[in-house]
Amino acid sequence: MSAPERLGLSLGLGALFGGLALVHPLGLLGGVLGVYLRLPFLVGFALVLLRGLLLPLPEPPPGPLEVEGVVRQGLLRAPEGVFHVKPPLEDGVYRLRGRVRPPDPPRLPGGLDERAWLLGRGVRAVLEVERVLERTPVPDGREAFRARLREGLSPRVARVMEALTLGDKRGLGDYAAFQEAGLAHVLALSGLHVGILAAFLVLLLFPLGPPRYLLALLGLLLYLFLAGPTPSLVRATLMAGLSLLGLFLGLGRAGLLSALGVAFFLQVLLAPWSLHSLGLQLSYLAVLGIALLLPALPRAPGILGLVQGAFWTTLAAQALTLPLLLHHFHLLPLLFPLANLLALPLVALLVPLGFLKLLLGGLLALPVEGVARLLLALTHLLAQGPRLVWGEVSPAGFALYYLGLLPLLLALRRQLAWDRALLLASLPAALSLLSAWPKPVEAYRLGQDAFLFRQGQREVLFLGQREDPEEVARALRALGVGGLEVLLAEEGRERPLRRALPVGVVVRPGREEAALRVGGMELEVTREGWTLSFAGYTARGAPQGGPVEVAGRGGSWTLPLGIKGAASLRLLLGYDW
Image (cartoon, rainbow, N blue to C red):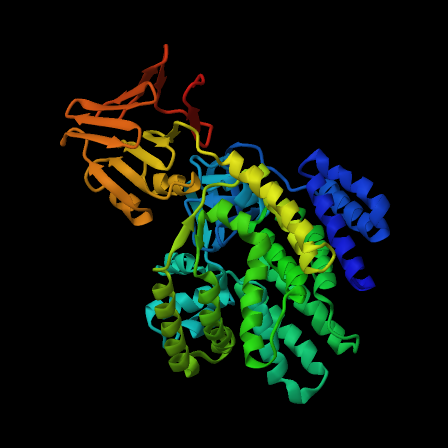
């Protein structure tokens, strides 16, 4: 590792520990590491820590409030602080009356963690608007560019181009298909888009000589203004800007690791709370994986080498982000390497075409329409491929994954023998398999009125009338449920669950009767209610939902309604509930 790379990495690592110290006391261990990693680490650590302590993110007190400020993209900026506005309001200058509350934790597994999401945007309070007292529209200088982007395109392609060019995924009905195909990252503005755009601008301005690097940087800054400063886009622009400045000054292109470390330091110094942003975490981990793994992977010469390089890049970017993706999205499309190989050439055309269309309008409508339709067709075809469903990953699961990956990385970089690396990697893998060993019987209460019983890989779900089926479907994915053997639900309420995962037998309580055996569980449904017997226990419930009574092995319990304040109540039979 060269001296500039060590400098950049030490600075970025110090910023990471400085940011963590603002969240948890264990981050202060960075001060001990600074003794070994020396000055750059200590500079990054101290500056970020002091920035967070001296200029903390304000937290408005809860309660009624009348406030005046500017609303942009759902955020109200006022002298009293920054608020997330509910219900959403159009951009403008407002005088509002409402009630301030702290952000909500996730109500169910897999639900939105409003607190972490807003904290990543620099917001610590929600304003529930009760009355709009005054509103003045504010002209948006970016709207003219957006209108030119949409000009001449069909509504469906226009929404895709807004997502692909500006990161605006509102109203994109095809977003689920991009997720299921493993292509959702092409709609999240990041290094892929900035790299394509920077290369395009440098080639386009080649006759101008060295000044083309500065002009390309100005083009990237314009793009950042038009799309908005999301964490991943800021990271990519900082890294590309460092490289373009180095080329303009004759110093050569900045190394990937050194640029990554410096960009991370600058971004966290400006906004320490951005560490909570999932986009920032995925963006930096993906680039770090590429920087560490790609140079160590073999590549053939010629065109085959280009294809091989694209394939290795996809795998390297996924290597460090995989547990984070599974934890938050609970889905891994198994055809994602093939999807990226086929889709990225189309994206490489659409990104510069979209940027030019922001300036030229309808002149480029025909080629953009054709290439975007081809991308959509390919996405929907690949979305039919096999997928791995995975539940939320525990902190121990994250630790075991990266401990298992570390010796393999060292072996790839020829710093550890492969036999030792495989032995060391197998130990965390074995511990992970042991921890995931299925319990004899598990029961989960999900929100208001849904109950899941699981024995091995066989699951029975009772869905009452008080719980939203869409939220329950997300919760099942977060729990790693790949399918339901039996579902008890009212007519029509099973459809969101069928769309989300395979469902076997559907029984409508109160209307149908059934006697089923699911693995070691026996289910009897009558018009008066249902009874589930398993492992010496018996659970009973009413057909329209309500409390569930469980008895067996000398004890009895009631699963009441209306438990609040916890994401879910997990019940392991044999323990007090």
